Figure 1 (cartoon, rainbow, N blue to C red):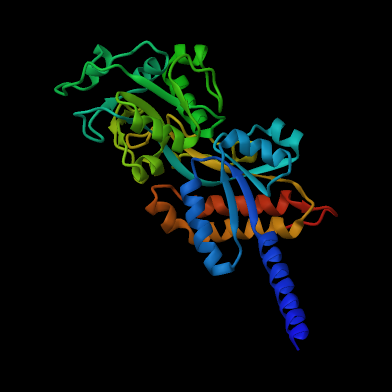
Figure 2 (cartoon, rainbow, N blue to C red):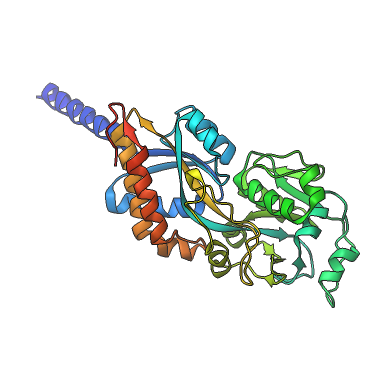
Length: 347
């Protein structure tokens, strides 16, 4: 009898292991941008409850995400820097936007309230070029009449990894300063001339919190989550703005998603009195030919669900959901571009 019970237990145990393995195998895997991680995590949590399907998303930075999807070690990659058509074609990839949001400048400065300090693109560019080194410098004082600025050294904090957040930030500064464009330029990874690096938005946020006199750049959700003081920024129309979803929406309003292959829209320094100057979209990368069509379809089902049901969660975290007109274009691109090994459409 004991032997029968033992065998029965082993069978049940083996069955449980198979069930667990199947469940784990069903989980989708993605890697890349830290910019959208808070909203992807929220979406994944809710989607798991309603569908039973999990998402394992590694917030490792856009550069690492691009490498992983090219190496086919994840089901999708994520990048805040849209890949050009030539690179997509070479790697056999397609891309589509999933969410929009804003990058903000954050500071650690005693005596300055969150959102009190005003900065402009040219001034931030000169700070990151190492030309402005004190918080009471004349260029900063000129933007902040009546504000008592400390005679404190500025410590620049930047990303140490390949990052779409860095791409958006440097793209804005390159549009603001010809010198910054020529000396540092706009890319996911650049050669900084000064400062200390942090890995991911979390790493930059941690360094800014740790170092008195620091300035850094992070996605808005990270600034709010970590309660780091942000600054106002001067936009293309000359208005100083506070970051919020209305300002991000204003910047995204004029985007023409059909203009370039792969929906490659850059939303920095957009015109409009209420447009936040460092706004961007985050992109999903997938292989056009899918060896595991069922898994690819699960990924598409997840984003289709997020487009239809994730807007409230995105807005709560101060992201900007894609307009319905854009999600229709995205779903049409799935049908046209994603195929299984036999050439049959996945979606």
